[in-house]
Image 1 (tube, rainbow, N blue to C red):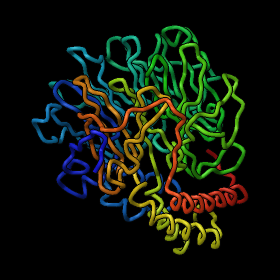
Image 2 (cartoon, rainbow, N blue to C red):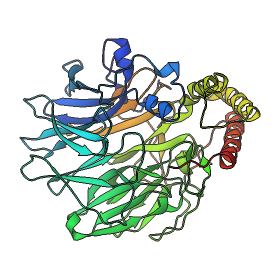
Image 3 (tube, rainbow, N blue to C red):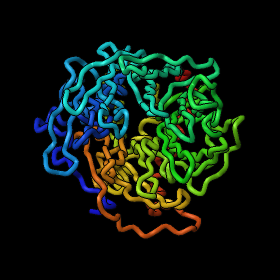
Image 4 (spheres, one colour):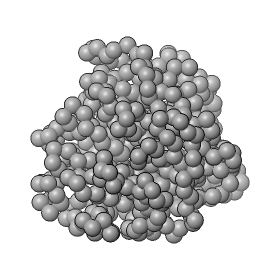
Length: 494
């Protein structure tokens, strides 16, 4: 099995020797290091929240027990220990969604991470030192955190709701005594939820997710008191790019991975079921261009620039690569990892059928003929795509122009539907954490050359096998019919 130089370091998916518990550790949601250890905070039963939010039965493939108390596991980075259980919250917390060492590299550095209060209203910040275990440190309005960033020696934390959306930006700053957080007031023109942050060129950049397309804002000067400048708006020319998932610095620029939410209604009332992610390059002078991305599906008119047609189509040609969930520079390369939701379709159809034929009211309002067409199209596609194309994609480049695929199938496990973390360690290793709601998450380490041919500067061509492409086109057409049906039948809000 080709793994591109990555080696799996979790003998048991989900860490725990108790299978029912391990399966619930389905997302490697938070990863960082402290001292000799790598720490991984888990998300618990995360897809269940989405199905519950849609009013659909939770598929049996996802439902072991019902324990939403998040866990943290750790392992010595030198490989001399097995995974150790480190911490579990006493109450429902859903997951540790982000983790950061602060101040990074300092002798007295601590780890900070965010869980969720039982009622979902607060992001509960925990911290630990090398000597002491995790303690609840602060409760911040918002529910959870997707992003924490050290900027010019200060720690910034952004919070967002756990499952819903309110498009309110919430930004907090750890005070100088490190005794608590102060909320930063943002101007009213900054809207959306802060889902990513990065410190670059002496400025703090915010990625804001919102209907109509994500925005990127940065500080005018070194800190928020200097004011804010809009850098990218309206999803870089495509309203379906609602989420600014992740940012990294490479080749003296910011690279941002976007995403869309499958089945999310747009501002104009239409519903788009799926679209591949885009990758955007942001220059120090605030200009931007699309590096991965095709013709806009829902074109917008950004005031910050004009959308270009990249060499690669959105999602590197796979419409089910809905997220560029992680983008990371490492050892002179840049890596992009996806969330490919193809493997979710069988249990999703099962859940939908249970709802439809069990008399349960569903928000989808599907006509029987359309449902039959969609199921039959999928069953034809499943034979061809189950092995080669279920599971996340991972791509790499040594120039951010020409990209090479490392895997199309979750590093050989099609149940790994997402690259949830890419973490470069101070010891020179790159760790990859997966999202796998069927078996429990995995952690991999890159230690070897991947054996791929070096990139050359030539116009790329991303192709599927002809039979597969034909069948997938039929399935995508059925999804397009479903989108049109949604536009006639539903008027839901974001």
